[in-house]
Image (tube, rainbow, N blue to C red):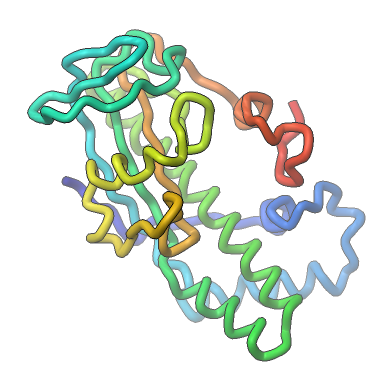
Length: 229
């Protein structure tokens, strides 16, 4: 089961602000922009980001509206989004994380009475996970292309068709512990800045833009991180 480390991540102030629920850069005071730049520089200098990906690609032996079976895996898994899995021949399962160091530093800021630094650093961590997720999608797309196929858009636990309760099944399918990721109650991953996903591989896979993903989410009207269509 493959593990990838040392993935370069590109972070922009706009991405951090979006993760703080701020959509218009012009609404931000210059002091906040300066502080974000300082924090981004500190994150790079102190190596707070330790991005890692654990993934596996499974051959699908049975696919219906109610169940999904993998080659050499006798367990039958609940179905995912049928629109994504249509014509799927393989399923990529991936877990990625930026590690615990940034989260620990953010907690230290709060404990030191520096809530603004802690909040902004947490936003940097969320933006880093977003960037890492995009790198996972690019990598799986290349894997699919090498097989003469396409890769679907990612489906994350909590999206329609993949309940958050299925998180434990996904982590069993990849070497998550090798990159330091585990689960606590309610399907929450530790470190918190971690993401799991599945992607269908096959001919003519369904792809969504990030804005289209937001329109499918049940929080689309209230989420401060929503990307407008």
